[in-house]
Length: 417
Image (tube, rainbow, N blue to C red; front, side):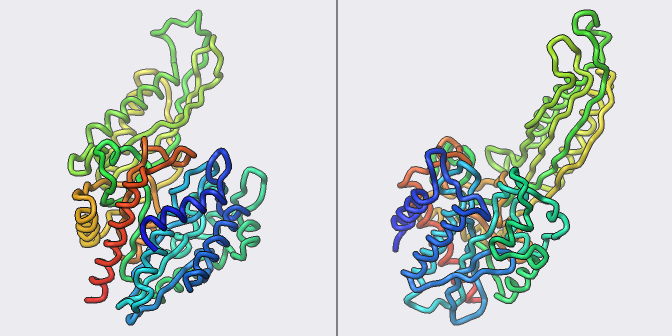
């Protein structure tokens, strides 16, 4: 096999699991199961096979002379109408890495894992399988989840041979492997590498997230008879806050984090009441998603956002309430693995740009248990989670080759431990 073969297999998988709208490999569903059956067929042709853990993750293992294990991760599941690279790229590049060691017993054990339900597309809980493997999954925190058709998560899991309460047992299975390093290849899902015209990026870590809903409450009034100076306009307070949060992100940007500055802020939803053209908004709710690579920067951004919201509320004579939605800490990747990743990219492409990841990945969970790093491939137009998702094939081939070099370098380092 070769990097070109990886691309051919990615195309074949896409052809089997996509329709005119894009990939349909939503976790726990029939197309996802078909994708896994397809992979089983490919593994059989190579003399390999997969085993499933208590969290529904599938492991393909190549034993080495040492039980110390280098793990390569990815996921076959997709969002509805997703792309051909998001997830499977890491799995199939990992299989190619195993093939390169298969005929000569490697000095350490290699394992490729296809994590279950990385996307969280059906039940709105991302990193489900990898959180089971890391031990952070609390079954009661997801027991209530249902999909849009009313199917319970526990029933969907059972249909796929997984018991929710047993999912945390996957942690002991993972630790028994003596894991020493975790490597993941993924498309960037953003425009930074394209802006640099670079095929491959070294990921220095994943953002932490602070997600809240802000509710501003003023007074509904007639838009024609209420002077602007006398209004208690909830929407204006929310709008001022949104602009202030954008400026906070700009101010707290870290030059060493590259073009993104290591921090982003998004107001993604706005709900106005009563929502009619002739009324001053009395209530406005906005979502606030803040992400940063550095925990102190993220904490500062949140504190500054609270001050900005309070100030906007006072200026507009309204009240503001905060509701916490979700939080996850930043995950800086292992410095030594970052350097190995940079070496591999430099050797193949001549460059090794470093950038953070705004989206979360299974590497976040694996980084809790072992040194971890990710490599990014160029995303055309920065698009992902859509049928237009793509990477120019020459760039994709280079990135796969660079990743395979990273695997070889990591194996050598772990073997020498």
